[in-house]
Length: 278
Image (tube, rainbow, N blue to C red; front, side):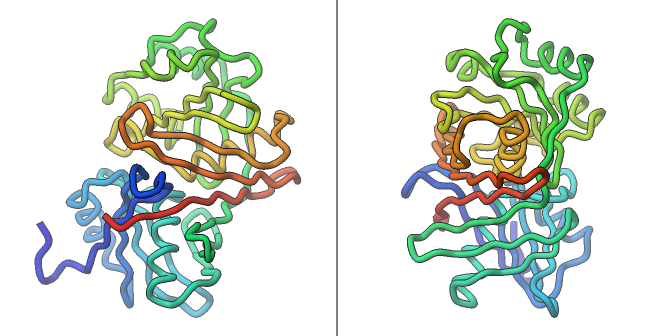
């Protein structure tokens, strides 16, 4: 419940499919950031997977992201939501954001899309013990995995475990124990576990487990998408740089994420989507 002492909180769905879907984020923009304890309290009260806080500084904006249970270094959908708010308050343009994971930019476009450029993106193969633990968590067998998408840790500001599945029906049936998922993710410094099915080389369906943030899954995850871009580049996936991700469909919040993967090793990715005021 918000009171007179609580900063104004906007609620924006990012990566929406027209007037539907998208991932809700709380957005707080003020002259200065609230104390850390206050940001954590607000994020818990808002209850979305992330709430973003921003305040102006000499070379851009200082930005922090909070999930209901803890701070996170980078959140893509909350950045897209923030970009739309900054544009509404300051006019369209490119906004420089100083986040815990480094410096990024977010920009708005005349077509209604907002685009962020991520921190450097890279990936490494997943250790066999972590892969087995993840398979056990979701009740999968090794035969459920797509050999063309080998399990890996992908990073573009946060660590994400990537599991590629061979069958869309396996993705649709995703379920897991939230407490066990959070423990696994905390033990391996994972922000999400990104489950994927490739419909075509340029169109993916995704479900993103986010137990460590206190929710079972996100309907749209920009940070995981940018990390995925680096991973696909590293394995030389034949996508010609542009990717569409459908996420949230199985939880009734269909979201669309558009991704452009840079071709140079370690280069950040650009992720775009539309927003809607909730």
